[in-house]
Image (cartoon, rainbow, N blue to C red; front, side, top):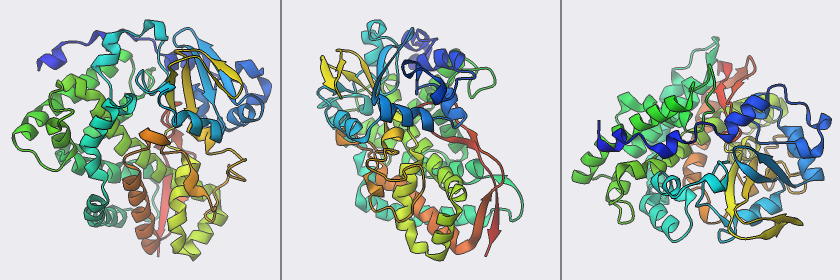
Length: 439
């Protein structure tokens, strides 16, 4: 194993107890929003998402306390921003609300060391100019010309997966369709060995997994071990692509002016960002589209009757699902949001999942409406300098999936409740049992 993996990075091992782990312990049997004192509402509790009980907690905060303070032993003070306009304002002001101290709820600012900040990070967790330079290194993969080149391959693989689905038998849509399609594309973007492509799925799953018995990972130590395996694997690819670069994400990072001299360990953040961004988000929107259309069968009927509605299905499902629930910023100075006094170093959670359900912007926001005129105003891809680089690629995959599905099938029927991801950050599905009926 390389020197990079033998280091046993202390900054990863030092945070054995994370805020989500603390909330996981506190949150079993968390009361309904109506039964809690306003100060006790904590929307970052992963149990709310695992049990799909987050709606009323955010609705109450939007109505009564849209800039809401919580404090934990592990993370210190953090604010939940839940209204659309406030979220957009924070996301658009990178000078006041910095990304450089992390994108998820972290440990107390006083306990964050320079080593933690410098060793594993990604350009989404940076401010200009470093953010701009590193993002530029890989943005060619989402250029319109490259999307045009990728679409035939995406369509061919989608057709192959759909044609293989068993009719009249229950199967897991998440594993059989959503994960398979997104992982195949991600392997293409990385020029990653196809036979090992499910490693990408595994690494994506563990990045934001909350360690717990019987969970995706059992302990923080296991999580670190597997992330180091990811480093070792990509280190070998790094060496190959430096010698023989191609048009893939690994080659771009290995040879880009802003990234080529970084040690492999320092690249881990960018690699995990691209893996999660290209895998978790799209696959959970694909799964969410099936679950959501079954939840609102009148909209499914509209889609079957008029397949041209796929064009608006794409942004509406991305709004309704919101595959990443929030992003974090850190205040660089004392300031004010919605009349609340924010202190320098306070953590700010921009709840995209709540902003996308803001009735002031999206009437009947909890419902799917395939004719919603402003569906594309959703904040699922963020806003400002950190707007999701792969947004068009995600939209393309979802559009192609439903175009090809509607040509081949009468219905996909959800036959049981999904198993949901135990995370307040990744809003997703671990499994979704379905049956399909062909035309």
